[in-house]
Length: 352
Image (tube, rainbow, N blue to C red; front, side, top):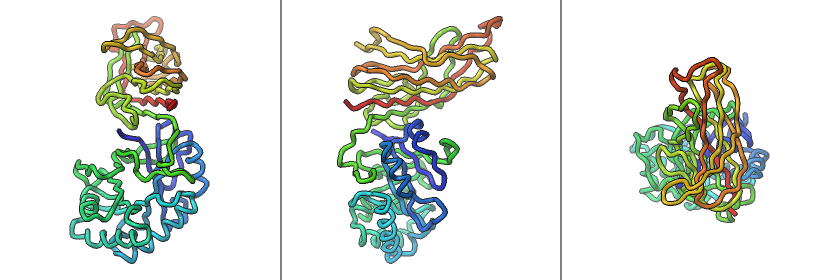
């Protein structure tokens, strides 16, 4: 199980953009900064009201953790005060950043800093953001309860004790630079204003998958788009790998949202996007309902094709997003077919 989220600093993507991207949580800063980097009460309330969980990390300077135990205690007091002001429930953890390629020879100072934070918060509320080495060494030494590991300085290795993974950087959501994160456990330190995760999450299941591999389309036919990258799949509703369907984990109402980038079109070519809901038995479709939710004509060689649809689903049904392309009037279908080269598919499904 993984849950998709993001982190960002001075910019604000906004609630609707984060929801459209499929983000279930946002990791936000606490710090001495006064220029807009930090989480503030109004942002915390807006995200919470939208059902987006919050995670907080303290970072003043990249190498602050080398200042030792007293610095850890000072920072923990300041971080706790800021988090409380933003509405964080008592008892939720705070991550502290080691934002450089820290060596093993620096771990004693880092551990002392974490000891200082624990003297204020308690060990069960101390988390660390860092690369593989500091995360592993801090867990091994019993200095942290929560880990947020970045892929940077990690050499492709992941410590499976870390509840959060920052796995990709430098993405843009609504004009704001964001990093992509995923939670690998049910408790990764998340909270909403006045609500901790253990108080219960009645928010809809949000599954988000995306496409990186090229896929050739077929003239005059619908092709089910294959999604090869999982951003969030809390109910294991999408099979790992290059698979087209979302398998409904329960019977309830769902909102479907798909966007596909297609290249190789010519001006005037027609495109359509439809959602297909398949009854499924013995490994195959036994009946299909479909509805076209986008129908247009290309104005250039590449086109973003998007569609949305609300639909009541039954447990076990397979739900596809499919794209069809048709050559422009007077054109022929003997030229190479267009290709789907990217996109995303987000399903928001009620829990009951």
